[in-house]
Image (cartoon, rainbow, N blue to C red; front, side, top):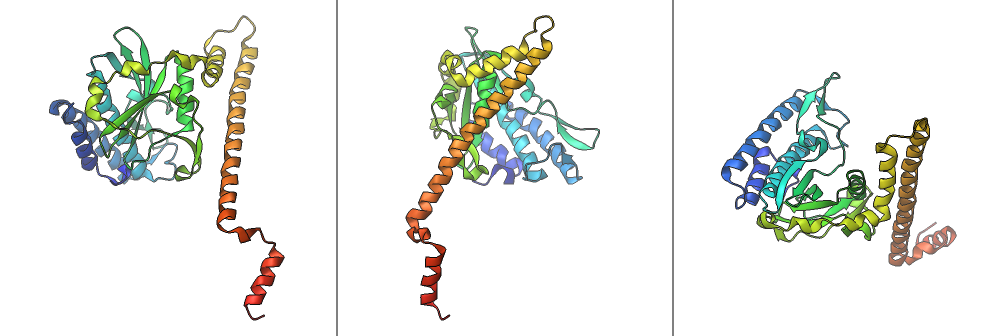
Length: 314
């Protein structure tokens, strides 16, 4: 399969239609398709006219980056409708600004996405017993399933600030399958340096094997796990939430603000320390691989020069 950002809208619409034909009515699908086809045409016309996106495109170019945005919105709406039909679910909404799915031309003549661009989860699911679950949607079209460390960080922070367990649903757009994992799944995993993603730290995500048709009857409730609030990765954000969300005692506002900064910096310091250790191990592995394959690289430059001289006329 081609990369999603290399596809025309009609191609991605065909993939989404085939993937959901057994669980979404044609009426619902066409309604969603028409909504995002209109947005796609408007967006692409602005790109053709030379408008640039606010914040840049991370080196992908306006067209590819814009396609990723529109196709992502399209898929989010489809998955929301499928989960909405799950009998265990009382209701599902987009979480925070993720439901805006719109754009405008700002005062600097740039295309600006409505709402704050965050890494918060996409959906807020409420079950019939009143309990809730936040869910982030990820998809893959090239059968490579990884989650950025930053996404796990965002899940941890959202769990702490909202006091709601968090999860990720991964959609395999090649095989029409999915897998759901909650935050606890990542707690004991070791992130790795993902050279396919500019060296970013990532976690392995299991290959999705559940057919997308099963999502409408999936026991989504099982992914609620209150244990995550006892893990340090979440507890430090609970402390940050206390400093951020609560009113300070009289005359203590500046001190509380200082502690909020200290907590944020401490979190960042620990992240950098962890990244340093992982990068050190990655470099050690690269070094050992070279030495194992080419043991002569351990010879001195003098030795190598002598050996070269013996092989050529000097």
